[in-house]
Length: 160
Picture 1 (spheres, helix red, strand yellow):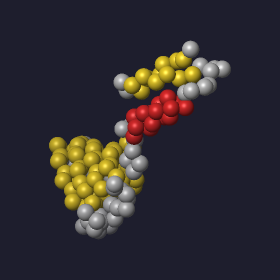
Picture 2: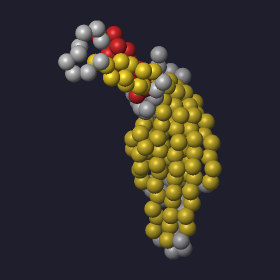
Picture 3: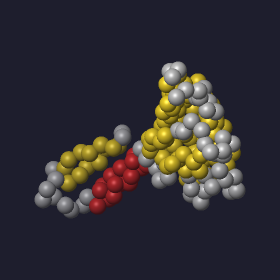
């Protein structure tokens, strides 16, 4: 007697306790199917949903600010597909801006080529360094107190 385990649309017959002969191929096939299925959930070098703060200004407003945790290995990653949302709020007067964006890019061996599509305007500009670190520049918002956040995630296609 065996137990049927399903991964995606494939069924695998697994032995029940006390039954172990002749199932090595089935167990190996099941393990490979599970590994393939998990690879679609999180691949090596993917960036899971992360939140970081966004300042209202830098010491030098023309200097980019690194986004902690939002970087990709140039030795392992060939292409990126990222999403982000930025919310910036000030008080006195109260003001809130939001922007959502999609970043697609590839590494050509020496630099990154990226395309960014946005909706909304949080007065932020996102770029990437040749080393794969995403950064931002902001236009300062008027107001007494500023709270800014960026939430982001990224999927990759790794080098072959």
